[in-house]
View 1 (spheres, rainbow, N blue to C red):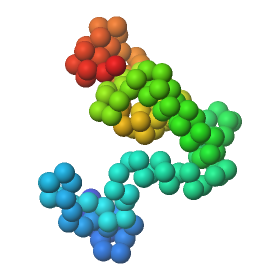
View 2 (view 1 turned 90 degrees about the vertical axis):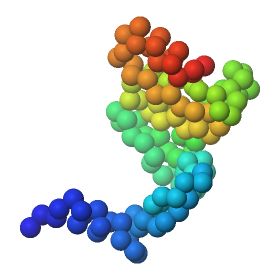
View 3 (view 1 turned 90 degrees about the horizontal axis):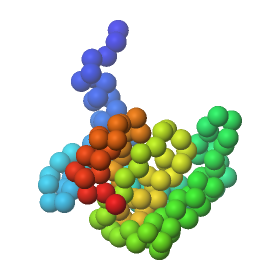
Length: 138
């Protein structure tokens, strides 16, 4: 017999499970948090470097290893900061299809301390203009 949503949720978040939930605090707000999750996204990217030449992403027959991907992330993050002057807290917009470069752009923006503003690349010019203005993206 199939599990209900509540039963399935409990099965994966119970004590000892991979997605165990515990009481925590995020920026002064008490909430449930994942016990086994890295405390911030930057640590996820840092841990990615530990996987070296293992496949990270495969797209149309092209394989990106963890090392190759993170090297591209580092190069783009450096470009954002050192060439374009992106600073912590800046909003950087990305309007791109679901390509490997999107993943690297997202990681580079976050790694540089900026905030990723994902935009739908199918939006009209007016929609793009509104999103850029509304988000305050660079």
